Length: 153
Image (cartoon, rainbow, N blue to C red):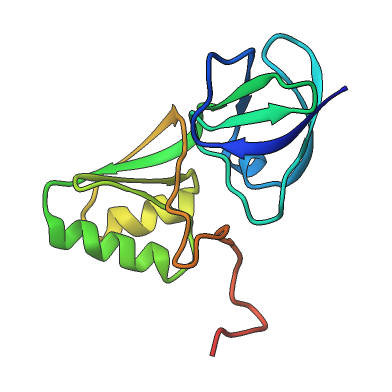
């Protein structure tokens, strides 16, 4: 099994490709299958997030390029900066990982969140697309959960 031990944001010509969903790209230890069918294991320092285009150096010197897999996401297009900011505020208040641009935002599909944003007057489209959320204020992974039973005070 190939061991993927080091992350670089650039690499020479890749020797292979590894397509992963966001939930897989936030794990530092993971058994994977490369796009060409070879088995591999990811062994990285904790807290590293793999992004589309990042490269992993294998124990045998090969370079494997990471690709963000299309997954079910909700995308909101919006030309009104204030309305887009309000949407980001409400989703961020729920600790929802977000991919944000100046005219749209994207999150892992959730019909309850879709209805919340529709209630703000936004149009939500469900689609298959790569998901590359903001890494968070401290560069680590984001977390997603309900607030039943605890607070962040």
